[in-house]
View (cartoon, rainbow, N blue to C red):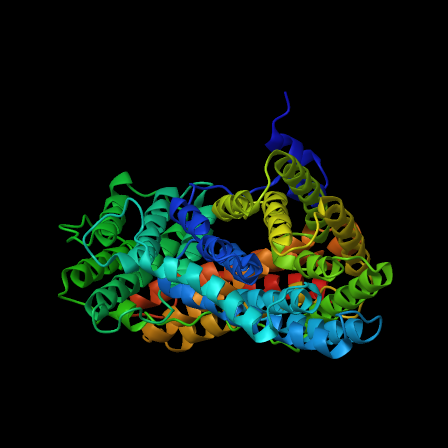
Length: 609
């Protein structure tokens, strides 16, 4: 019998992507928050003002889509900034509807939505939070212009913000289930992120000398990125938590030298003793519980890599006991994230133009059809055009399947029950399912379809299950067509990501060779290099899973990314050598660096053509 994984390998990349879904434990805290997010809607129904709860429920729904695993401090920007953008968009959409009269125009609305899509799309290319902001402002503008609600525009905007703010408040205040340790619960996400770094160090050391070393190094880089993001937000209670936060920052910083030593040992390719992983795992447990790490086993320092690991473990133990913290790891604690893409760069212009065309075209089509729920069509295209939801063909298939499934489920629900309270219960159930459904776009679409159709009835509009299917299929066709137009700048997203990764790798190499004693700068540049490489690989994977006319633009990119990865790993190994040798860089290392630089130049010439 053919398993799904084997079947996926036999399918074209664009179709195999449809079968993929993120895995992991159920985020029960997010599920609980999603259910409670319907509270403002319930209050409005009890007050016999159900239409007032619709904008609040929309704000909570969009915030729920952004409510991903991570720290509370990171959620302030991840949920709060898009909510502010959506609130402003809802107000702007209401003003546009008032200006054009009953929210309909074959000329004004397509032009306005197109210009807004150009700006929002270009901004979205600069980072994940900016992408969420751009999406919410566009969706909210369209809904504000087309959804017939009796509340005035300013009140709609405030209600939208209140719904999203309610979910954010739940995110900040509710404790995590099954938490360990005695520290402040508001730092649970940060603690888990830092502990995951030490666990990733242990797994990389365990995989050294085997086929899993490369995967282990990538997992360590991802863990460092996640911890960096988790600790980057604002302090939640500056004075009450400052001691705990300083201790957590010190423990995160102490992982930097460990990560460097583990990467160098994995690069060397020699298997390591099994007991070598005990130290990092004890440190991970100490981060989770907030207790002392106790004695940390250290390896015999018989070569530069093991000496670096021994020194890093000693420094970490001192930082955990509060007796150290002046070493290189702490000075490198504030390593910056990768420089975000420029909004008006080639990639930003290309994506902005594509969003603008999708918004304008779908608005013209919706206005021409004179459908009662015309705003669904442009709002759906805004979601569909987002590249961070997967390859274009995969998004279209998942959207079509999910919409049909959601409309059918809501049709059954409408036959079985009636009245506002079952609809509120439907919204609460969808809010609870959303954190799990976001792992696959078809499942997310199914849940969102049921939720939106419930809100349509609560808003006083007639049932529209079949109309929802038709509008979504039209949006799929629009985005599929516009997404494959030969617009200027096609392929620049991958090229720009590779440019950033190559530049970061060169800066890291130059710094290691010129100033090997500067551990602070080295740690920051190493993080930037690995993070840029991860972003480039994500862009390559996304582009290669598109339909062949689009996927061909990423041809040769994987060889460049591989060359960059080998160069960064070798640079890290050289940094460890220079740390623990009085002489210059060993000749084999210098020759390998020269060979890898030549390899990078050769591979870079292929996608550059």
